Length: 333
Image 1 (cartoon, rainbow, N blue to C red):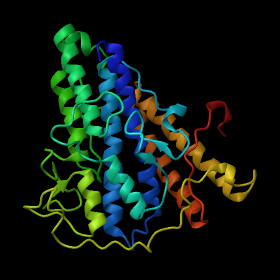
Image 2: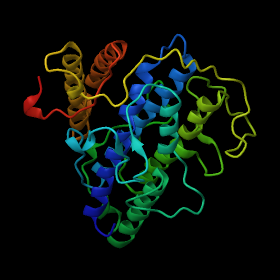
Image 3: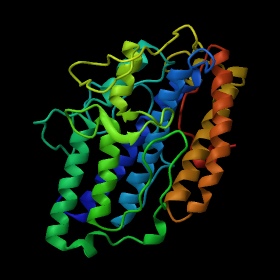
Image 4: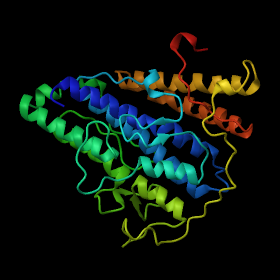
């Protein structure tokens, strides 16, 4: 990252990367029966909420250096399955209901970097390596150009400090090197842990305030092994605490990687999938507005999210599922 334009391009990639986790996490979340899988729904819902925070942090970082976040764009919704954006091509992001296959994908996505892993700007093996490269690029450009030249964005475009009820951490405005490093730290620590030898992310568990919160990777390990991490546990020991009940039968029967083309035009399922895609692209449009100088629009996204949940669960109950296909602006209903 030798120039500000390089940095801006990589921060747009960060937005694409953070968004890439959202459709698969939503499919898993919407497929769960919260009455039979309350703990799994808390875990997946909490991780999803924190990924939304990470998306906002990445947008704040891009705005801080004079960029323009783009969300309502086909680059954010390539056909499924597809490789993790700009990353390890062996990690194929797919849409599926909650279950062992979905958990394995989530563990690949959130895999912590090893202690000696190099920073990588493209083709990274872990998300941590990618963000380490962004941190190095920001530091180098600040040394070369000075902080004022690097952090040249309009402060009015920053999303102010806020947090979500179901998520640890918070969104931080970015205006200088210190706040940029704090934002990067928040993203990485929630994903892979506060240290590469630790399972905790430095926050309190929002559902169990008496406990420390484990990072995303280790939360998915808890679901995989059916047991919580407790004090003294390490990445090597795995979770040894109290059991977590996971009922794999308490999941709606979503068809993996569905597509509208699987159903005839005008059919009930295809029409419902098209309604979902229109609503999801509306959400991307709303978020792009929020991150490009209209933060007051953030409240409008809540209603869109509720609409998406109802549409997705209706499709799953019909044995299909949401397709997350991009709808060009001029074709939206």
